[in-house]
Image 1 (tube, rainbow, N blue to C red):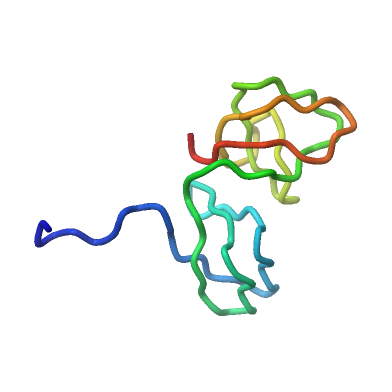
Image 2 (cartoon, rainbow, N blue to C red):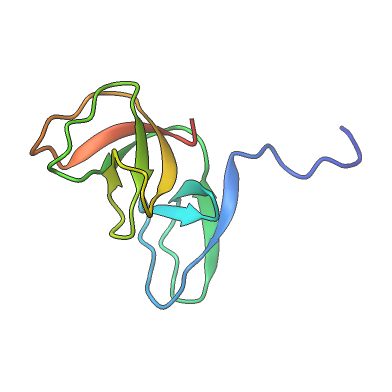
Length: 108
């Protein structure tokens, strides 16, 4: 193993602010997103998964086609528009208007 190896890059620490982060919640960490692997208490730090395909909440009005870029907004839901949102990844499956989740390859 190389002497400068840190980790495989599949997880990243997530620190909760003034509210609990629930296991499975999609969270912006700088310019990437991660899915919390455990419940993270206020002010505590836990691991988030920074790669993989996850079912994530989406803006119900958007029609998202497979392969489209999606963005995490301040409300914690994915949308097609990038204004004031963090790039989250690529839709792994399509999701119709009215659907509340979309499968996303995060940071893809």
